[in-house]
Amino acid sequence: MSNRTTVTPNDLRAFWMPFTANRQFKQDPRMLVAAKDMHFTSSDGREILDGTAGLWCVNAGHCRPKITEAISRQAGELDYAPAFQMGHPKAFELANRLIDIAPDHMGHVLFTNSGSESVDTALKVALAYHRARGEGSRFRLIGRERGYHGVNFGGISVGGIVTNRKMFGTLLTGVDHLPHTHLPGKNTFTRGVPEHGADLADELSRIVTLHDPSTIAAVIVEPVAGSTGVLIPPKGYLQKLREICTQHGILLIFDEVITGYGRLGAAFAADYFGVKPDIMVTAKGLTNGVIPMGAVFVTPEIHDAFMNGPEHLIEFFHGYTYSGNPIASAAALATLETYKEEGLFERASELAPYWEEGLHSLKGEPHVTDIRNIGLVGAVELEPIAGSPTKRAFSCFLRAWEKGLLIRTTGDIIALSPPLIISKDQIDQIIDTLRSVLNEVD
Ligand code: PMP
Image (cartoon, rainbow, N blue to C red; front, side):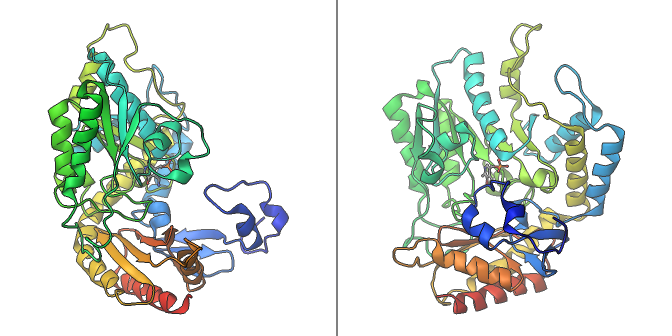
């Protein structure tokens, strides 16, 4: 199979694609064969404007020479080094740079290869932390409805998406879920952070009372839930979660896989909302999506609890063959430099009002029931077709693809998260294309 040649169904047989309707796709495949800055090139030679930064990850735009050259250099110098009982300088340098940009109260970083691995690593750190401090009775984890925390067993247990859970047995036991924060009717067409719903955090107090605080290890939430349709936390909600966790000695974990590395116009959502989680889970934008890598941030208190044991012991029995991989580390260092040199987090913040204005200009177009935005993230919610949920939004996806725009859909919600290098003209192009798509679909 080569670029720009016809793909036969036989070419597509072997790859069982992730999160894809394989049978449908293989009848009518869409292929990307190249990318540069804000655009993909499709196999039929068309330029596709990337309205989603790949999968919320290509924050600096595609094929940036600084990053791709750093990868090639590293691949020729030190391609792989084990991370168990030995190291290589780039992983240490990267951890230091990450702590430089992290909220001030973060002290240490564990490396993984994906968001899912970062989530499960964070949950294991939380459980082991309480044991290390002699509080092993804290075994319960609390997630949230409509939370997406990747696809590993820990992540789907605390996650709140039924399709991700129902096929896979009993999952982790001892997990409760907070209610989601989507309040249609109350917060519809809110610009930025919605007014209503901070009291939904009180549900945490109820769960804590039900089980007793001494049994609860951690609460995990996405500060802004991305994959289930951009659910922005109501004003004061995250602060309340923080207060309740602090009051009861429960760790608060922010899953910043989407919100990390500038998406909201600050380095992390923790900065944006001024709330201090105990653990921060990241991936995606860490390497600009170019090489798989994740990073889990923890406070010095958490780290030190592990370091207080006997000196000859390994402090935390966890890690991956590729933790802190040299090529991934080089890619991440070059990515962080790019974000800094080009001021991309600030740029996202500066563009956010223009983005908001454009998105909300779609109010009143056919099928639109809600619009949400924060930083350079947006969602346009559509009235579902009776009996065929998801169909209308997916028709929009197909129509937008034909018109040279990549969008993402989840249920009947269109989600948008362009690279942070986007121009105002390109924002206009996204909005204009969506407007015509909404007027064309049934
Ligand atoms: N957490 C969140 C909030 C995510 O959005 C994602 C991916 N969309 C993940 C975890 C899982 O990341 P990965 O696909 O890299 O495993």
